[in-house]
Image (tube, rainbow, N blue to C red; front, side, top):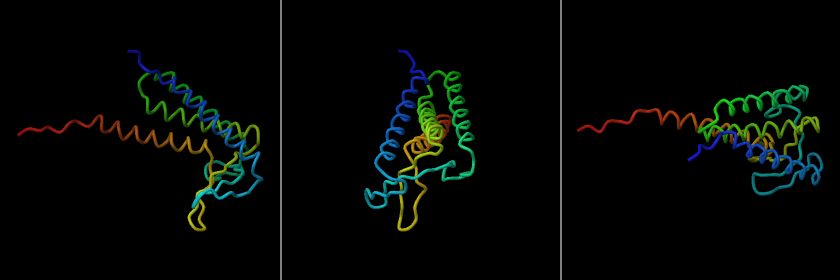
Length: 164
């Protein structure tokens, strides 16, 4: 039976980028900047621009800095997939999601000069930083990486002896 190659997960990168760009385009076309549409308690749809990194950190930086970082991360992921061709499915999924999210935001920075964010979770008057599909994919990918590290620790743990 052939081993599933890690690079075969790149379809997930493309799907992530596609869903990210479609969702952002829908927001841009249908909501004016800073409009808020309540979806359910504690969740709004809004149209915001982020010129920085996560949580708007470094918002004064040039978009080129973030484009270069996104491209370098993506090249690093592709190199990893090439050098580790088989069998690390959870890591391959995680890295594919991270790359899809990074490139989704790179597309925004190149075409718009900022990233479109639109998901707004809040509790009372406190609002979590608005985010998008790309950010969600990056976070999910990072979570899968942590899960893989935890699972690897359990895989390496010697079985307890059941001697009587």
